Length: 159
Image (cartoon, rainbow, N blue to C red):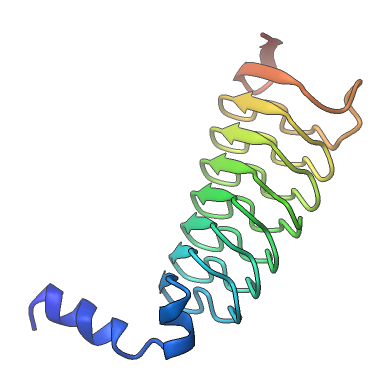
């Protein structure tokens, strides 16, 4: 069967309520709990699996944005990226394996690189670029928000 036919066949089994919402989920469990969320894209096993009412999210990778029921405007690219996020107005961006993995309610964060902002839970408006940058930030970094760091693991510096 040609790939186009497979995609059409897969899209034809999407419930009408989700099709109207302009969501696209592909992967085992991806978007499984979605009820009224709109304009979401989830690609990979369990990507956006717990999203119920969140809008305008993009998740690509195994368990990307997995536990996010109501997040708005977040982007997660990479396995486990933003996988524990439960923020309401997320607007977080995580690119890389486990970037912002343990973020729960922090908003406005940008993490680029493997394990960047890994342990951030409630910190907000942080930007981390590079492998492991601000890996152990949990919102306790003074002033706790608005940090801009780049580098690699322990060898990083504020910009």
